[in-house]
Length: 116
Image (cartoon, rainbow, N blue to C red; front, side, top):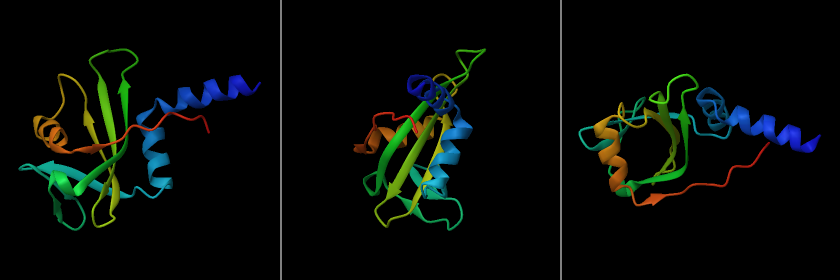
């Protein structure tokens, strides 16, 4: 029974919407985007250099019906303590600006998946 619960939980974690909801529940409420080589907080307009950004975790998703339908969700913490997310396509449809920015980010962590 416990194994079945873990499998169901891991299946749900593969949903972008589920992971975004969990991130918000865990305090990652800021919305970020990348423009002109900087990470921007959408609400305040504050910008961050790659060395001011820490990727706490990230999740990659593959579309069920189309393998080219890929997304990535970054959970981000900035040096001033702001926590939020940035979602982008992954693979051939990815934003070049987002990809180039995260190549420069040195602190990228991937946590081990845990069923909840």
